[in-house]
Length: 398
Image (tube, rainbow, N blue to C red; front, side, top):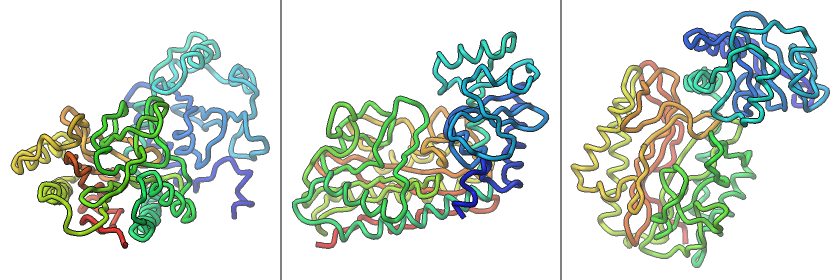
């Protein structure tokens, strides 16, 4: 099958492609955008089902055009080969639109200036929000792909208790998790929107390292093993009385699930405070998923979680201890941080087809991080969990 499709530019079923293009065009119309020129890998993948070097030109009306630089030998589907952006208009005599939307949130300034010369007299608009909104509501095809990733993700997590050995560090444990993930088909790519956040395949936080602040806007930080990548595992030994929070890559087919579970070496050693906070996280999931219906306000979900945390007198540990994250949930799909965002000032409204990761977590000094993260899909009449691993704190098999 791969050999048959490898030279086809468009890898989506035609009906799926048409649905996604229609969704983008509806949002373009609302924003007054006459055409978009897409270059970001995640958006290229969303529109075509593959990543290539080049652009997708999508006018408000008419056929999309795929301008390809690399790889060579992609066939059909309206592919036009170019060596440089200046050939976009010269190669086909493209009519200049009144305005054109670019991904100004991610496109380098030099590229924007170059494209401005390619489209002289055309107003440049920011189409980043158009694409983010389009991708926030998943199609049934996308949900099926995320569901399949979730099943693989669950399988990997089921093997974690058996790979721990006494004396192991967080980095050694992460390496073993990465190994089994890759063997189960994980692609390794952990796509994050924006250029300022980096992470290698996920986060394993043991003990006190969970309390180390990171420069990145992640729910949990960690010092990392080098200042060039200041997040995650740092060589902390895994010892009784402490926790290991595992938040590892769930990308098995281009669409990701996001799941966090907590492990500990031996039963009976964790503090009552840690156990209480972990149960509070589970309770928040139950309360928020009951509220997470089409039309619900994202900020109301945040406020409900805040209320529950304060009732349990856990606020100083909530979403960090030394440094606190400002959100407890986010959309997930091709990238790990999509819309909607569950945060206090979020204006997002929950829609049918949203896929949302909820991650109310706590950091308990001298113990580590507790709490769970699950990925959910919002249906018209229910919320479906796509990450169904055991939610209680799991003891390693020793």
